Image 1 (tube, rainbow, N blue to C red):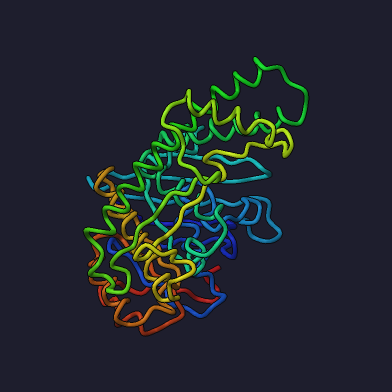
Image 2 (cartoon, rainbow, N blue to C red):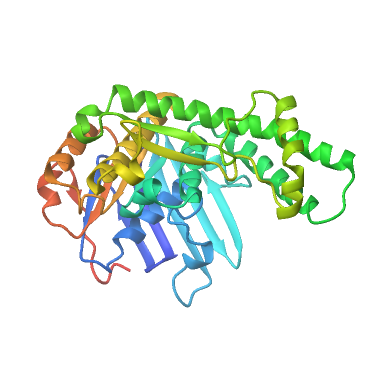
Length: 358
């Protein structure tokens, strides 16, 4: 899949802008403050329907305006045209695919695949569990779109259980919500396990050549209550019975996928505590490359890669290895203030930004 044309109206610092993009991608080289990151965020918005940088929609509109619009004209790998337009005004979002209104925002995940990498991705290793859950939930959704519905239903049940603990309830009422909770939790866990098996297999088989520093990386799943989940709904129900007194005291669900975590391990040790900054940085980049490969292999769609200044603190050897591995097999957009990237990525044409572009 490639993005051919991008049109922006009142998106971040862009009042009205249109960009013709190369099939192999572009370098976006410009000083800080010229809208490089905003441009990449708008491309990601076409593939996710929300800000990849966790901005609210009302924060994406240009100052002193009341709407924004992002339109991407794509060609899929068969050469067929695909048009995606997302507009927002006064709290309402409208999605159009091939100029037809679409109610389910998740439909984008079936058609467009984008992967965004930025320096703040280091939080995947050292940040809060919520950041890791958000990343892996998104990555799973790009490969298995039904996961979005399952996760949404699961989180709705979690909200209902939390509300239950704030008031008197009957045994039958709690059992009904617990039964739904267990069934959906098992589905969510199965998706997450399936994806982690794929990721860990890829770490072991395909990526040692990218870096000698991280030849034995694995991602572990960490249940919040420090015990592996029972394999059946019946045993999960028993776990909830044992937790009931504590859940009533704290008035919230104390076990489940909504509070679980992931841990990166290098040679069996927690990468967060034992790894160097360089090891953490290259691990995150390799994780994004794995995500791209899995998307292509399992969906048949080549994702678009967005690198937002991720090479700033990467040594030249690793930057060269990443470029060699990618080898322009995907459409790539690289944003940076560094002019020397033009030498590292000679196959990418520079996309000129001017101070008056926005």
